[in-house]
Image (cartoon, rainbow, N blue to C red):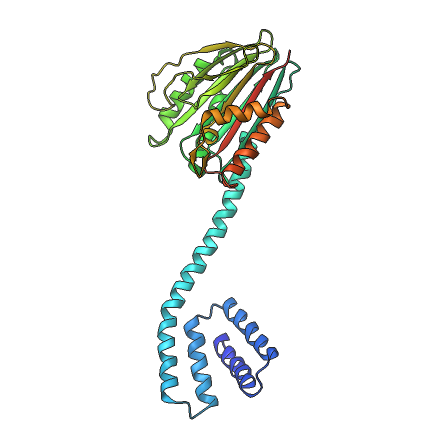
Length: 336
């Protein structure tokens, strides 16, 4: 006896019991049979068909209209059953995809993970929060034997898995550069060539690359169309934009990038970010850059890591705790 015949016999027993003595116990038996039918892929129309056959066997004098209504329900359940099957299949695929994305997200974190350098002369704070599982933002620190700190911040125009794959490519392209030639302009020109040859033309990558030299407090940098950061002059108590000009990566293979330099005195700040910070949207629209400066001023008396964390929490609250874009914020403060 196959399961459908077995189910029909069980259904007859349960329905007969319920018609004679309706109670919760019999209903529970029906629920268990329903779950068992799902496990054995019994379709909704099969259940309606079984119900009609059983009710005809139990009661010979069923009105014709009732039987016709069951025929009508059976026809309806055929389409419903097909739709339900498709839904279950899509749900299964979604669960599988979510599992794969979770694994890919963990792999990305391991691949792109970076340690924040520790220097007596420089206080560094960094935070990067993806809007989805996979991030299109990237930041990386490298500290050499002379306590020079290299800082890369990049942003793929887009989100999700394609953006994350681009970030992985950027990271490994940077790792392949000779140590002796890692000046900001050279780094961007090299990466620009890699992106132009390997990334789909519909995708764009902005990037900022800077080097802080703890020996003299100099900060040299180049930008490839990246969101302008801020420079805070402690002596003048004044913020200004760090607006290095440069074309986004991947548009023109032969593009040259200009290198800029600033000198940090004690108390000065360098603030680097992605457009997920400046394009925070509230009910009134996008926030202004002046609002970001106000937040920095509000918390700049704290250690740099507490500053970036506090700013993130405030901007997250403004957006009702729903990030619309990847969020990356880095602050460097010269201490001595």
